[in-house]
Image (cartoon, rainbow, N blue to C red; front, side):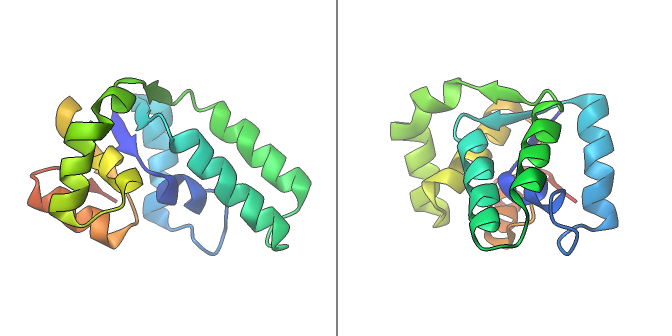
Length: 135
């Protein structure tokens, strides 16, 4: 199982962001599963809506991506919500991350899982914290 952030999931939706490594992650998530903080669904959905509004993708394409992502069976971690005011905030401050990104790191640390991200600052913070980073 992996923690996957929105940057990875969105790379699956936009061909110009996809790489062989991110494509391989889809298969890994299908095989091993993935877990995400509670805000992940809204973060992904918002990015797809913005892409739709800017004409980057059609409405039908955004809707298809939402269905496909939903079919992956990604687990939503509700514990993240209970940890926002201490663990997540402390990580955000210490690592100079957004609270959203710190939530991914907190989850990976707490569950002892690797983190899949394309966000360079988040990846550096994860490595500093001893969390494995993919791709």
